[in-house]
Length: 135
Image 1: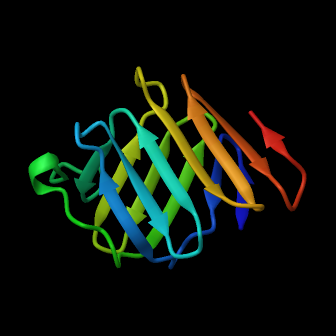
Image 2: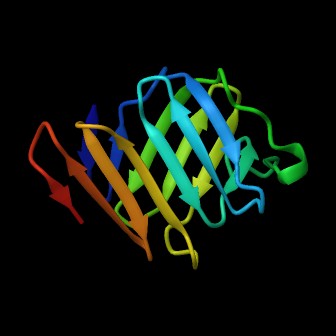
């Protein structure tokens, strides 16, 4: 499920469906639950766009126009040793978190499989079915 590369881990969620999606009332965080028991919780600034954040025509979504992503599938989920996170959904939406942003904490886990967390610009991965890896 987890593929480790230089500076990042690919989380094997391609094709996994979003079963729950909620945005924090203050707009500073969200929770995404995938059908295969993976829970992603973000506290702090989250950038949700339609299209890649680096594309010139990317649309930054605000609290007023955040879609309900329930039913969308993950196309790519990448977590970085820098504490950053990138999720691409089948709807064309991209979720980005910069680990170095002040006040950001992120946790993604699948019970008994892996736990990734980010705080103060450091991403840490712990796997339970293979050798632990921490950066």
